[in-house]
Length: 226
Image (cartoon, rainbow, N blue to C red; front, side, top):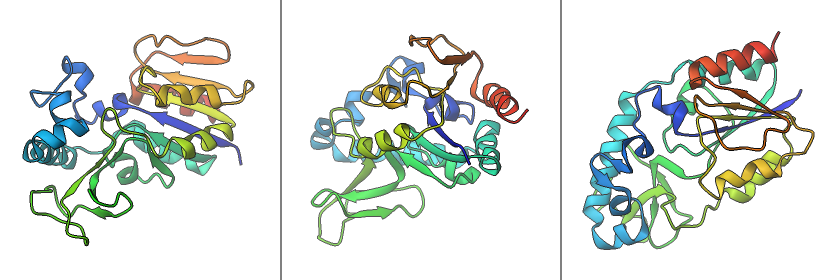
């Protein structure tokens, strides 16, 4: 069975109603990203950061997987499908995808500020001051903030290297290190890019589908299963 590796970004979640900060001038819920998504922000105002992610969690709970998420699940009938997502929501899992790697963390998990390997599911939508790990330290969102290392990059590179087909959906591929993943695919691997814009990429071996995620994944599904 051929292996499809799918890199997804904010564009696939946007059609489920989840706002992206790039579409709103660098603001999330009225906050500058540097105020809520950096280690410095956490140090300066933990309560603000926690409240911000509580709001994002509530928004994510209201959203439902869309047709693009569902079609990626349907592809599992014909291919081995591995998703590498830059998104922190759980829409891929809720749609039924069985192999999902989150590059930038997960909204519905918390981790210890004392020992990063201590990770806990968040029950409901809120993580608050006073919620502590088993070692007694405050829990923080299990999110890779701007300026932090991306621990899952090593695993993501290994997955991309084994791809028979590489698909990129709803991401401009300009944010590193994630943008560099495409360089690890084999030169012979066909690449499909689904995006309504025109990402600045080397066009050799790349097929562009200039549509939103829901329409573009449908076109891809038809191409791969004709």
